[in-house]
Length: 180
Image (cartoon, rainbow, N blue to C red; front, side, top):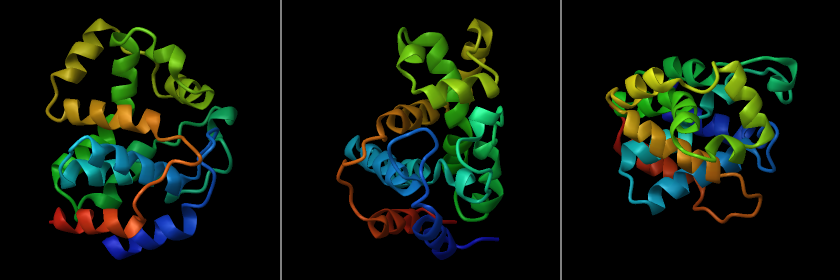
């Protein structure tokens, strides 16, 4: 089992790696996503999910931009064992669901697919592609799907190299409030 302190250390030590195909680091992306969730009035669980949604990228080392090599890193699943004993299902569900939320938004929101970055479009293909109408209906009917969609939309916006955010310690404090 990993502790919240160890997650914080991981973000501080490995978070300075480039977020594949984007103009931000992993840590900048995590902080921006959490800050967007906080600005939208999300509770501690959803802000924590926003902060940790890409933790799976940091706990494995697949090199730079694995999508260019046709690799889906399955980061939405890789993170779950590290988070499972620390956080409630609401956090886990949003982390796990944020990839399927991309597939859902591509199917239901005009222009969404075209607005994705090149790396997000490559990963979409590796993750199963755009949902068909039935898959989209099944996804949005699942418990926690709305949280995953909200997280995905913040995720998409969290790619600005100079966006100001609160420090990591601020969001770790929020995460502590929702630990099990």
